[in-house]
Amino acid sequence: MSRPTPRLARLAAWIAIPAALVASGLVVSQASYSAFSSTTANPTSNWTAGSVALTDDDGGTTADGSTGAAMFQATNLKPGSTGSKCIAVTSTGSLASAVKLYSSSYSTTKALGDNITLNITQGTGGGFGSCTGYTPAQGAAGAVYSGTVAGLSTAATNYGNGVGTWATVGGTTPEVRTYQVTYTVNAAATNAQQGGTAAIALTWEAQNS
Image 1 (cartoon, rainbow, N blue to C red):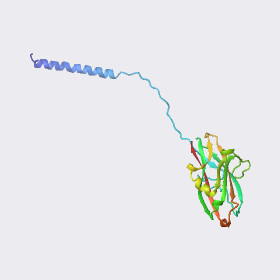
Image 2: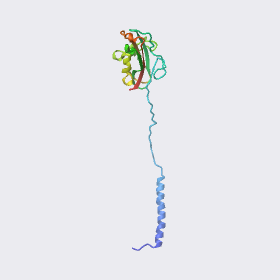
Image 3: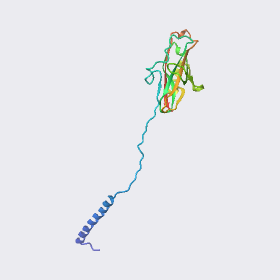
């Protein structure tokens, strides 16, 4: 087979250049055409956490109610002494929750805490200033704790072992539960308890369910 002459080779090269330019022009031309399109979208999503919130009517302003008034400042007690007070706890949380009662800051001298019994019930009506109108819930629903001050200090020390059966439903309407606390000094307390002291703090805590 004969080889092309230099003249034919140059001619073929000149022919190839315009052909390449035409081909590239076709590619650019085709790429510049508009394309039909369509979309659909979902509006911006938002997330907001719910809440659990408790207050009581003892005038407290801190989480543990330490600036409020104590339920009892009982002095000059003797065997058989007794007293009763109420406190209303309000839930304003948006989430359903379980509310438990537990104790803290327990102290005693001369074993007085072992000789004072507490009977705590829950119900409706009344409040911190007065138990007038208080009605305990029926049966087990009304029972919260019955035992000594010393016993409460070890039996209910945090939410996990707290006492009470109040289940809030949550929402925008406040829910109120009244607790009545009654103390009684052991009628069989001895001279060993004279001048003794006992102290305990009560905390209500809600956790969403």
